[in-house]
Each structure stands twice: as structure tokens, then as C-alpha cells.
Image (cartoon, rainbow, N blue to C red):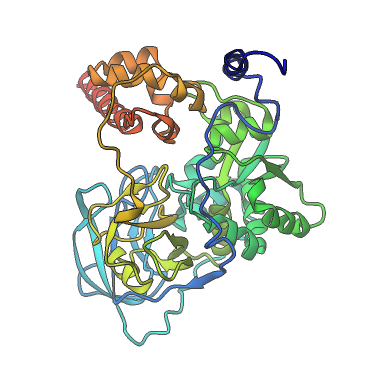
Length: 470
């Protein structure tokens, strides 16, 4: 083998990789990518309280599902933690005051999508101690499953990993299904972000209290906390803090993106594959982000609503990098002023650079789903000079963690063949991790094509459903 021509070795390694033999470690998934991590600048910085903004801006749509519905009036004085908006239905959560202050107006506010949406402008009392209103505590031992789920909804808790899916909906086990294993997601594979890392190191008591609620709510007999190998300190810390007799274990998995995606993590920890179009409960799993778990453990014993969350603020364009506990609704412009953002800002991402969104308006605010703010200067951005045609190299196929064919999907998107993308090539299984775009040598913005295509498919399906019901 040592004397074999170089091209034979190259093609042999390519074939081995294509056949999946490279995936020798059972505690991970096939394919994926390894972008630079960029976590060293903040992963050792403790969580600090962020300054209270004089004005907070609170969109009613901070989660998937129906927006919250205001229950306060303009000019009303409210206390921190007080209910501002009730849930707009089952697939919705309420909103609580992140500061004590006065409701200045209820009007349209800017959002990260670029659209205006209903929201509340809340002016903080300048000299308030910002004490939090106490509610009705929920005892995890005495409460029923239904009472715990209701308490989680009443607290306004959604997935804090970025998806912002209402947590009580995720935890509701459908009839005929059974949760074999509760998975706590401490992977945090997105570059630059260290929010979950610090939560695991600093809020272990809240995490295990939250797990008690989650085990009872799901009926799961055991729990595993999944952590990537670049957070060994967090894994060791949590393993040492597991309460006696609690059915919890910590499992360390290899560093690879997007290891933190639900389906990928289930494969890594349980060796099970969620079927196309299916949910984790189809294979007996429920996955909850570790920061979400900590909030459940922090809020439910006091009957409080969520008013703030931990956010990583980092990137080359930031002077005071760190992990901050920031009131929800804090304007992004105020945040950047406080952390000393560079004057020559080129791009600001809400979330990480792989799955986050580049913002177009600094007047938007921190929401429940904001896990990070990454700031880049002009010299840090390498923009391709042009998009080249697909060369059929297969790099995107090798990278896709759910074994789609991004090259074919991209070609179909170009010709607007959206129905074929969804029907024959499983477009809707794409969770927009960006791995395909990351490896594409032709600089084709594949994930943007798929995001747009999925939106069109959803609108068509909704229109067809409405037409069928009329």
C-alpha cells in the first residue's frame, strides 16, 4: 500500500468515505463538518448581569406558534415578572415584564425577519431595585404531569437553544407513544457560542432541579446529558453533581457540527434514527436544551415567568466579550453600545454564523431565542466574488448530516421545482444547518435556497388545506 500510486490512495480513501466506513466511532453520526470553533475567547468567562436598558422592546411573536396577546394597557405601571401578555393558544406562551416600568405604547416593533409585528414598548423605572414578582410555586413531587406542563407554559418557557419552540408542547407525549430516554442537549456545536457551556458550569443545581420536572412530565425512566468533548470540564462538573439515586448519566461525544441537532444527537446517544418527517418521540426520545432545563429548574419552584436569558456576545468587532444575563427585550443597539462594538461593523449575527441570522436593523431586540450575538468587522468577512456553477464534486452530499442531496435540491430550486424537491428529495427534512453551503467550492448559497423553497412549500400546503376546508 505504501508504494501504491498517489491517485489510487486518493480514490480509495474517497470510496471508503463515501461508503461510510470512516464513521467508526459509534457515538456520533455520519457526515457533518468541522468549522473553526472560536470559543476560547468566552468559554472561561463567567456569566455576568447585563445593564438594564432604559427602554425594552418586546415583540409578541418570540416563539413558534401563535403570538402572545397583550393584557396590559398603555400608561400602565408593571412590576418585573408581571404578566404582560397571555398565550395566544395552546401553541403559544405568555410574556412577562423583564423590568419594572411603564408601558409606553403597544404598537408595531421591528423584528429579525425584517417585518414589523405587534409588540410592547416598556420604559424601565430609573431607580427601581428590579425585584421579581413571586408566583405560585410548583412542587415537582406533588404536581401532576399536567400541572408541570401547565407551569412550564405559564412561565413562558421556550427552547433557548435558538428554535424557540414552546417547551410544554414538546414535552406532551402523544397517546400511544412512550419516552424511553430524556436527553439534555449540552452540545452547543455552533461556532463562537458558549452560553450552554457556562450554564452547565454555573447552574448545575438548576439543571438537576429542571431534570426532576422533565422526568416526571415525560415519564422517562432515565436521562442522559450529552456534551461535546470540547467541554470536558462541564461534563466532569455535572457528573460530579448528579444527586444520589437520580437516573442521570453524562455522555461525552466527539466534536462535530451539527452534533447538537436533535436528530443527530439521538443517533449519537441512542443509536436510533428518527424517520423522515418524524419527531424524536417516534424513537422514544425527548430532547431538551440544557439552558431551557436550567430555566425550568430556576423558575417553577417560585412560580415565576422568564424575564432574562444568558447570551454570548463575541466576535472580532466586540471589545467586552462575554456571557451575559440579559433582560429579554433589550435593544440590540443598546447591547452593542454597552460592549464596545467597533465603529466599522460589517455584519451582526443573532445566533452563530452557521445557523444564525445576519441582522439588517440594530433596533431589533433580544428575544427568548437569542443565544448569541456575533459581531464582525469588514476585514473579517470574506465574500466570494461570484457564485459558480455546481461542479458535481459531491462535497455537499458528504457533508449533509441527514443524507440529502443538496446538489440536486439546489438545481431543482433554481428551476423552481418546489413540489419535486419536497416529494422526491425530502426537502422538508432539511433543518438548515448550513453544512452544504459551508463546503461548497462554488460558493452556492444552498441553505438560503432551501430556506426559501421550504417557505414556498409551506405556503402552498397551507393554501391547499384552506381551499379543501372551504
